[in-house]
Length: 348
Image 1 (spheres, helix red, strand yellow):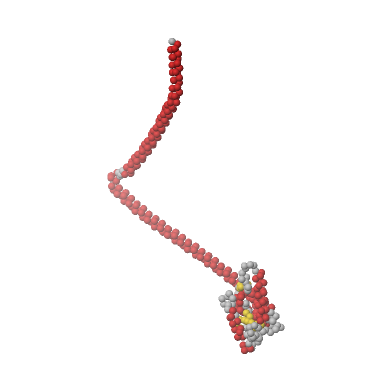
Image 2 (tube, rainbow, N blue to C red):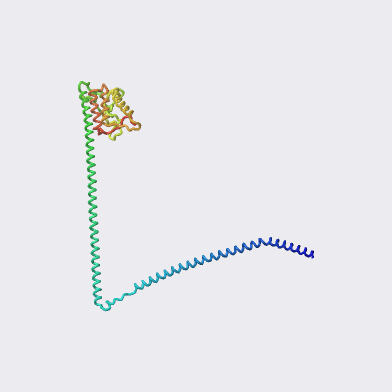
């Protein structure tokens, strides 16, 4: 009996151990089965929710479509009813019952139409005439304004011409005053020279066969004829230009060989030229770098006259005659104005 009890206890222990082992092995499977069930349940719930939302959206879309369709049909019905009302002919019972009155009314309407047409035509013609009058008035106003503008321009030009004439007159007065001053100076020097001053060179430098025999203060000839009139060789007697070529060579009417010159002894000619050359170099030295150095004709005339007076052997009648020749060449032969500017010798 005890053996069997021991055997049963052993079997019971073995059964318990077996059950615990099997439970340990099946627990993960049971857990996975439970998770899968929950996942399937969640997926089923989500699917139901999505289906419900889609069904709601479908119902909403169907409702909106139905409303739009109903609205469209209502509009179409209203349009058809309106068209039917417009197309429905109106029965004029007065016309049927009283044709004469209808005829008179029709004639009156036609007469009124003709009157309205005539009035419309008259209004159109009057509008055209009014537009033409307005255009004509505008054209006339534009023409008057253009004439006034032209008159103003003409008046401005006349004023400008008057101003220019006034300026020109003032310039002429200035030139005349400058010229008179130079003439007075030349005459004064000539009168001073004709007093107790020595007689001029006359024709002492001219060949005897070419002399005129007149009692002149100074003889002159063209530069190209110097050899034919010169007494002696060119080393002792030179043909002296009264106006230096370097200042007037750019003038179109100046020809060096055609200029009137006088035959002077070499030393006197050099002294005459050295004076105006020294004066020109000093003037250029005072000029600013790059400055275009020029001088007025009247001012250069005085420099040349002073050059003639600076030579003792020429001072007097000879210098006076040279001053007259200088002035004649500048203002008559070359046609220069006192305020006209010419090139200064040695200027770049």
